[in-house]
Amino acid sequence: MNDPILAPHWLAIVAPKAAPAVATSTVLILGRIWNANGAEHSAGNAALMVVLAAGAATAGAFASAGRAGDSLIAGTAFAASGGLALAGVAGYADGISLPLLLWALATAIAYGLAARYWRTDRREHIAHERHTIDRRETHAHVERVEALRAGAQIEVARTGAAYAEQLATALITRAALPGFNPQALTDAGLPELPATTEHE
Image (cartoon, rainbow, N blue to C red; front, side):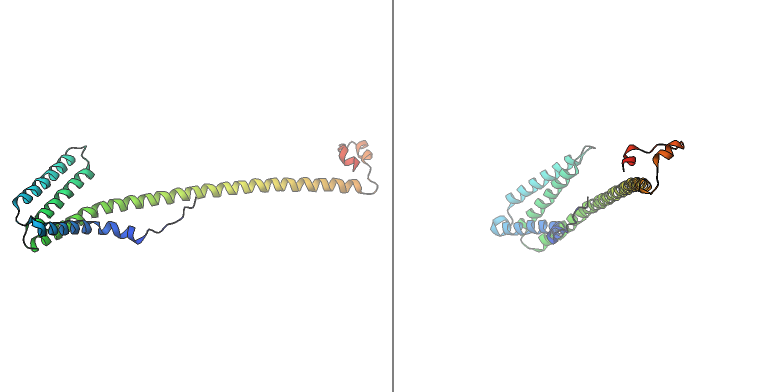
């Protein structure tokens, strides 16, 4: 019933918080590597990234449309669209200032979106912990009540056994008294003792 309490590893705590910055930084670095390998001022490469980013944004719009929209797919598609746009600018631009500005903007947006999911996840985690604690307390209360009931039953049985033992001792002691005559008790109209007592 008492589950072991496991402390999460520090990487498990830090990794989700660092993920947005790592993702946008990776895209920026790859875009600059692409820039250094011939993508700078390349119209064809820029057009390709525009088409890919627009396609991802369109997929995100379709995924989020209507009541049956899937927020996870939409969020992934919009994130891919933003990443492609950042990579395209980082690859096409000749300076570093515009890519850095877009990187900072993309990182801030990523953290803003992630914070909402983190809050929701934290609320669900707290609600689950409270439910688990309530359930454990209920089970512990039931166990305590059952333990008290079993203890009372054992005590009643023990008291009954002690009474029977005392009665048997009294009968044996009475039968061993000098001058005790069970027949005189029977003649007087008293109930007859059991045969086992008479033999003793």
